[in-house]
Length: 185
Image (tube, rainbow, N blue to C red; front, side, top):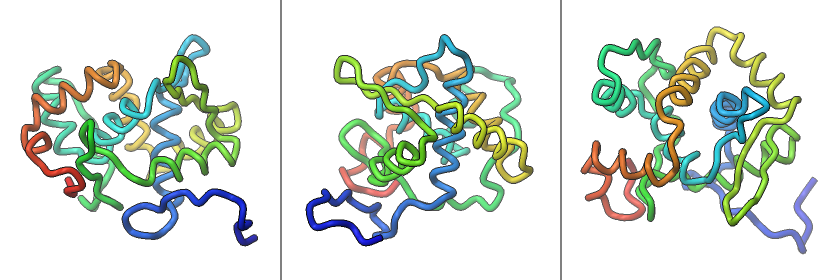
């Protein structure tokens, strides 16, 4: 169905294509890992989401940070066996960012897989029961299991505030701080 003339147009990712099903699955698994218990609020804030997704998408950065923060921790299988990243993140105001987040989060919300809540100007993302079922089915597949395992490690070792994660990334990766805004990472 074509968009109506009155509906706002969301920006597309830098590639000009709508966000892929793989990108939606990756974010769903990440959000679900932080939504596992009833007491969990999910992922609080887009900055935190972006920093966690950065560590999920860039295994070399994740491994370096783990070696510094938790030496000797088994980081498991590399979730991106090909070594390629579907779409590079860019350097933005508070570090790594993907312009597709708005479209991705909108798609997951529209499908009823995540539930955003807005409190005190902070958006919190949590999976719905349907989203949790989809995430479990993905995690049971051989190709998505390493992504789920990595998301669980992120929850276990990096469930920090968005600002703390940003500062940790800036301290650990000065090349990100030095990159121009809009530069691909």
